[in-house]
Every structure is written in C-alpha cells, then in structure tokens.
Amino acid sequence: MSVAGLRKQFYKASQMMSEKVGGAEGTKLDEDFKDLERKADITSKAISDVLCKTTEYLQPNPASRARLTMANTMSKMRGQVKSLGYPQAESLLGECMLKYGRDMGEDTNFGGALVEMGEAMKRLAEVKDSLDIDVKQNFIDPFQTIIDKDLKDIQHHLKKLEGRRLDYDYKKKRQGKIADEELRVAMEKFEESRDTAETSMQNLLDTDVEQVSQLSALVESQLQFHKQSMQVLEELAEAMRERVNKAQSQPRQKRMPVSRPSIDYSDPEDSNGGWNPSAAAPPSYSSTAAPSFNRASSRQKRNSADQPCCRALYDFEPENEGELGFNEGDVITLTNQIDDNWYEGSFRGQTGLFPCNYVEVMVPLR
Image (cartoon, rainbow, N blue to C red; front, side):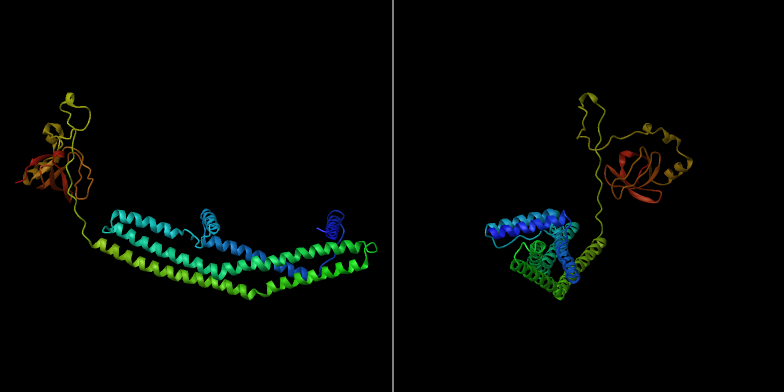
C-alpha cells in the first residue's frame, strides 16, 4: 500500500474513533437515502431468507443436504459433470415396499399391494425430482444471481461510501491544515459514492416485477407437482380399492386343526424332562377323572339319552377358526367324528371342532 493509502486509512480510523468514543458527528445522509437504504436492506434479507427456506422446503433433511453438498463438491473437484440428486423420502419408502413385497411374492395379496404401492412411491419421487429441477431453474437460480451480484454490489458501494465519508469528515474537521484541493476531491468522491450506492439500491427495488414473476414460477412448479402427485395417488387408491374388493370376495380357506402332542408322565424314569415326540395324541381320560360326571343334572341325562353327546373333561379354548370352545362339565352334542383326534359338535348354538381327548362320550355316534 502506498503512503497516500496508508494516510487515508489513518484518517478513516481516526475519524471513526472520534465518532465512537468522542461523540463527534459525521456528515448526515438525507432521509430519502436512509429510507432507500432501509427498503433495500429488507429486500436483501427477504431474498436471502426465502431462498434458504425454499431449499429446506425442497430438501428437508439437513443431514442429507450436507452429504449431498459434500458429494457434489467432491464430484466437481474430480471433474465429474453429473451431480447427485437428493434422496427423496418417497423413493426410500418405495424401495422398502418393493423389497418386502417381492420377498412375500407378488402373487400374494399383501405382497402384490406392497409392490404396487412401492412403484407408485417411486413415481412420486420422480415427480418430486422434477419439482426440484423446475424450482431451481426458475426460482432459486434467479434469486441466487441477485444475491451474488446485485446485493454484493450494494454492500460494496455502501461500504465504500462509509469509507469516503469518514475520509471527507476527517479532512473537513481539519480544514486549514488540509489543502483545499484535497478536501474538494474528498467531497467529490463522497458524493460520487453516495450517488452510486443510491442508484444500485434503486435498481434493486425497481426489479420487483422480476422477483414477483419468479415467485409466480415457484407457484406454477408447485401446482404441477401437486397435480401429477394427485394423478399418481388417485390411480393407486383405485388399485388398492380393487384389491380390497377382490380379497373380500374370495372365500377364506378353512384350516384343518392338527392334533396337539402331549407329554407322557407315565414312566418318569425313562424321561429326561422333555417332550416325547412319539406321543401323537393326548392321553385319554376315564370317567373317574371327572367325578362330577355322575352328578349331572336330570336334563343333561335326558339330552344324552336322545342323541349322541359327550361331556367336557377340561376347559378348551379355541385357537383357530372353526374350533368350538367349552368349559369343564359342559355337555356337547356330537354331530360327526373327523378322525381319531377330532370331533365335530354343537354347543349353545355354535358348531365346531374339538379334540377327542378333552371329552368323555356319553352317547356314541350311530
């Protein structure tokens, strides 16, 4: 830096200290300039904050944004032209649904529905990617240009104006010690910077039509996004309704209960405390195991004399559809014997299957 430059810096610092510490008053800018500066400052903050929030709106996950920014920076350093895209939440959900739907099998009702919905989620992610591209081109990039060029120019001119004001005020305060020519040049430079700063701020405010048009482009992009998303979701909703109707119209397959294995306690010396797989059916119970059998009511005896029936030795809680539940002592009407392990009967208006070893036959089937 030249000697003249160092001297000017000293003048500025000295004048600033006088104003900050000594309470000296500097040259006042007119009210119109201050009002223009205030409006330009609000516009500058609005553009910066709206641009930041728009990016968060399109890419809400801060961790993903940070990783994407780092990956794209590394790609540029390596000379790779293509940049990575933001991982849309719809895409991640769609991939999860597709994976498990295919694992289940597309021929199953639930698996097919997962695959169908996963594909729809992937389509929504593509629509969201299109929204990102449109907003970036028609809204983010123009606003970023304003920040990078217009707002930086305004800040530069205002900073330069403040420096020249300090230089002019220092020399004006020492008028007589400073050459008149030098004072005149300082005043001309101060006025020149004020005009330049005022022009740059006015230009920013005069471009509000362009800024409104960019906001309109943002709205149009969002409108297209929601229209396309609605179309995808309507098609998906119709497909889901068809699947529900188809599933409800199909008859449910009746599952035949299997016999329950039991533990044989008859020979504890040969047992190691585990389940004996050779015992295919539960042990049978004699009438002595249910002493209350001999105390049945006269009505139960009359019913048993009329039709095939049996008496419950234990409580039975149904675990599968088609099974008949009862409590110890209940009398069940026998209607059929399915196999060696299962009876079919009715009790209290309900019909179902129950294991043979849970009952004692009072009147056998004919």
